[in-house]
Image (cartoon, rainbow, N blue to C red; front, side, top):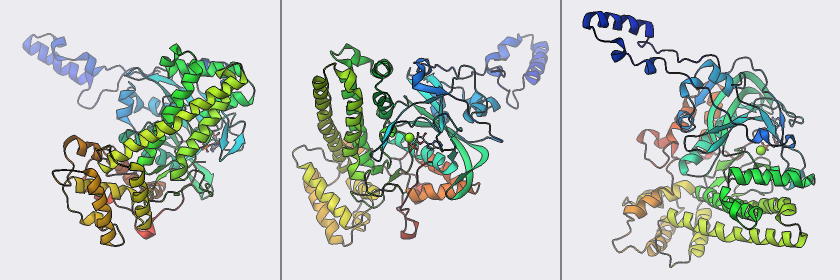
Length: 536
Ligand code: AMP
Ligand code: MG
């Protein structure tokens, strides 16, 4: 782009420095170059260097489109740590051109915006054509660690896949996705990331009336979904299925190339990634809310934070999404729904798993059968860590079942339960923990079972590495739904203080932060949020 040079900061004005150094030179006779660090002063700006490997696939994979024009985009937040990891120039991102890219108003050279094609099962119902209706992939950036990352604008306007929609995103869903996806990253859960959020300066019409329009810049290892494979399977386009699979293998799973049947190995890898991901969600009380096949990314990153939420009071059947009336994507249903989605992927891959139909079905079946044990192993590891258990000689299933029943009966907050248990394990008294039960006797009864299982000779305290494992399995801070709602309401009124505070706090969710203890707390009765809404 045009502005190649960094605008010098106040006090570092090059003319000023030249003049003072000239005087210095005359007075001392020393060469100017000894004094002036020209590299520092004229630090060249770096435009993002886009790659466009997805756009170089055959054109049935996407449609080219441009973002809409918006009247007055302004930056809400820039994720500088992520930008630095991506080897992007933070100073450039903070310029007018940077905002131009983040708001879709000024495409840097090399960006090649496309809307990706995909299909999907939505709440079990088949939609043969969905695609990016309100998102555009600008291209890929190679991060410092060599990873190829997609950069996508979400909410940048209509595309050929928009159907009846306006292609826009509201401020609320954009802030929710920013907060929750970045929190997931801090917990160590694979996720798409949020590079920036900006206001478009235009309002959009939603159920609740006119609200501020916004754009999220989303970063992902890729945006290929189960629904991308389904799109081509439904069209009988076997050539495209092979092209897509080869692309996925080259980009994400190069190790499977040497397998006897790389497509089978790719399927198994995707199944394993998904199984491990869901177990991590379960351990955090996270409910995705809209696990449609178009929202399940094949690398195993959490994607499409629509009506998602972390549960407060524990319940196996907890849902938040206003449209999930039958509890299809309830907390406890997530593993089986993931497997259902993966069986759709296996079906979509069937034409290339083997030329013989029966053989192909056999391969798909045995791949799907791996899900359960991978999920169970990860789920056990997650919950063993949460309880601080180090002994393997116990019936974890029975203990979990009993614990879940107790938490349900006493309507206990999921996060606080484990947070306060961790404090007991760290030598604190039991009062705060017992206080969560309807009666202290039940709490003591549960604790005595837990103590029996942690089997500590030195008492009930978990120590050293085991304590660290427990602490890192039990966050102190989660993006509580009532806080997200409060932050959205404030932001709609122009006040982003709580938004920034939440983002900042959730960067270190396992660390005690005295000034933010209010963000640890469960909602009061009148603060409870029962329903969340999709981003549309
Ligand atoms: P979601 O349920 O948010 O994953 O979206 C499902 C489908 O609807 C995808 O194809 C989206 O691109 C599309 N979509 C969602 N919101 C909009 C919108 N405001 N305008 C156009 N398409 C949309
Ligand atoms: Mg989606």
